[in-house]
Image (cartoon, rainbow, N blue to C red; front, side):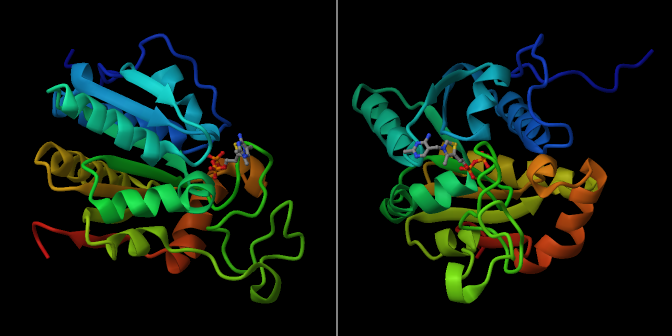
Length: 252
Ligand SMILES: Cc1ncc(C[n+]2csc(CCOP(=O)(O)OP(=O)(O)O)c2C)c(N)n1
């Protein structure tokens, strides 16, 4: 019988799924692993996971991983990339972060890494809340969205507006690539992998900071089923956070 699917080589083969049922983290990590396999990066990669659900990356991804303090992943990745370069090693370095991590507590580190054109890649899982700590309002919580700290819904008078991370990163001159993708159907999953691959290839080519924001489910904190969580992304969130490529230095 023809084998149609196998677990990526860069995934730990005996790992048990520890994310909540219906969480998109598993899918996002699988896509990252497939791209690492296809680009033959496994032995040369250092991944930086930050605080939040993204930290579980090292339970699944079979590459060298380091955990950074909350929000500091891009700063840690900068140090790793530069220190190895100074020793003559061109390591492939990427971060894997939540939206609260990348775009709130770590916004300075993230934005300035992009402005400096650090030759690293950042993957940001945007689940529109602080997931691991119980679903508090985050920088990407949509207007009107109910969270544990916005019980009447986000409103501009009290909470201000959400940040459109991929668009902001695209404005930085040091950014080579910035895209927003989603995982709610096959077409979008295939596209997400394509954009992750492009971001990784741009680092390999030495083009500067590359970034992919992945709109992701958080069924536990959204209090929705996995199916309804994907419907929420398809029907509501992509209107707030349009999918697309906001900067592509080779094709703009
Ligand atoms: C300096 C610091 N402040 C706060 C925390 C507590 N904390 C741990 S995870 C987390 C939320 C992470 O949210 P996000 O980055 O959006 O990732 P998610 O869990 O949603 O994937 C917070 C506030 C911490 N670990 N360190």
